Length: 437
Image (cartoon, rainbow, N blue to C red; front, side, top):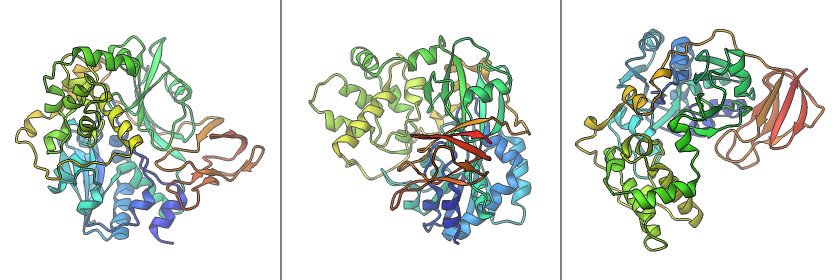
């Protein structure tokens, strides 16, 4: 089997949040492989812990990926402040074709467009992907899973950070399908009576009050905040309320655009123009939507740039959704030239945490050596980009650890799903529920 076939069989997807099936990337040809260890979401430490404790596996995964795509260079992007991770990676890179590129502590250093430019000097074309400039980018934990897949070990566990209003901030490894509530209660419990979740982080994560939400292959961690926290209250605002506020209060100051990392890289992303569209009905709607098309949804405009605490990121999200529904493709400028003020407008993580009013939660979350366990798992059939996996088990079946329980639909983009441990299948619907045998 080729590495791509092994990775496909093992159900490896992007472990940094995107969830793109990794076997597709490994079927391409590229000059450079970049391991993304930037991890710029405030309070999350999953990638740092992975690099510190599994550096050899990351480098092994890099070497395998480089061979698969024919790359001549492998680079691990890691923030210089992660000193223990850097030391571990430097030791693991000895004698290998892989090198380290130290990054600054700013947000969002992990955006693919930003990372590729910082590491290689190459600018991805508008609406393009790293492969268009000869680069493949993978999260560091994804590369650990690539190395495991080469040894015929499927993805059954996930490393995540539990942070924020919890009694013990910690990074843990859990079976895929364990609930966030169980993980938090097993490591110290909640430090608030009314918790809400930011699954994936405060900036780009999804807000949820479903305390039993399952941990998936793409989860990087969860930040718990009291429901009364100002960031939670802002994100709980319904879309129509956000739009009304923006329509009445946006004064076109351009701060959202001037801090936008994609704009500063030279791309035609202008959130203030998207906000302007809220003042119109249908007139000019499609035109203004174009200014949202290349938005990376980092949230910096909404949660840092806007002095009136409006919602330009959410307006861009709506514009992109409208464009997809209407079949509108990017048709804007193709020339990209970085802004001369790009370096001076980068936002330090600590400054961002202060703006978010979470400095009190900015604490270490060291890796707990022992993995967590649970008797019941909920495994969604869609934990990745593409189509949901198709079940190959039925209620009442007995499955073994690592057994295939759902497969990629024929001729579709997707990922296989495996049982984390020996169990009985309780139900099969949009998720497969397992109980330990």
